Image: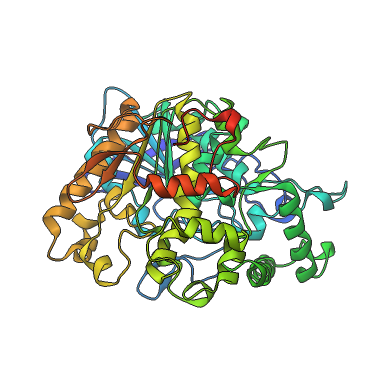
Length: 503
């Protein structure tokens, strides 16, 4: 079977894997090394002949053991990591196929498109779509704002990881037709930091027109930060690195200084993640939640949602496991009376189970609600809550934890991950079919497959994905009202931007 495809930079040879064809490790930008380290992504250099695209290349710079690909095996990390992967059905099609572009999570600190969970074969086989997964710069190299230290001799750009994502979407527009994909029907989707990337891309002018639908799974909108906060973190990073003169030092030393920066900041705010897109007034002109509510975001159909037990994964150890009121206040960057007021909406607070739910809601659900509310005034919006708990996660006490919906999205229950649903495989298969059908139908038409009403700021109708899925009006209304009244940033739209009643 011929797997050679001509891209703008040269020909690539993929591999046949059953019912799909896969091309891995295709450069979408020049390696950001040397003088390009702190710069916006540049065009990928061309090559002659046919380039083998049969395996994943490097993951972005991060801790070397953050990229597991098997038992005791790890994907290598390097700055030369701006690559993407394409999976398409082996069977030719007379018409272009919908394209689904996945952005991996990992708190903008770790992760890779080469993670086995993200291969995408199951989506491609079930949905007759073209699947793309991308890398982007992480940590200090991708998400610190050091622009105030830019000089004529050493220019520095901001929002590098976000710019990488836009560059990958631009590559898709120029090249995906050669793989059988439709550049006029592109869905961008991601989870956690990848979900934050999706909600941020909605408000990134350079990304407008590059995608036509969006799915944000467990977006953490708070990862997108203001310029003042970002620059203070950049100054701390440079202090730990040894000054601006060290910006050209070994990439792993830069990464290590970024890790120390996070550890230092965690002493003041437990659980803080100091990396994410920056509202710089330039590439990202304004806060995404506000831009979306005002109609200045991309007006494309959106699925957005979170998992019922987001917080269990993050509150099992360290200061967040048995927090005092002081730790809670510092974690949420809130006053003790604000914590007390919100806690009243969580039965059993400050007990551990209530704290886990409150923390997860703060990071993911509460700030996703105003995005859904604001976006629904301008484009079709569909909100979900993922409640399904496979056997293994129930036994571990994690519940419908952060990232657990990915097992259904990527069809893990039907493959090597079927042990996760041991004793409950029929339900796991049904949930997988439901989620994949909804995601794929949405990528094709802008509407989910299931009977799933649009979200608005009045009825707030939400799809509850569970062993027996259902639709609820304004689920967790008591908690939503508590967050909206808390005064904490990102948990409610300003009154002038509200599309529905607070009550």
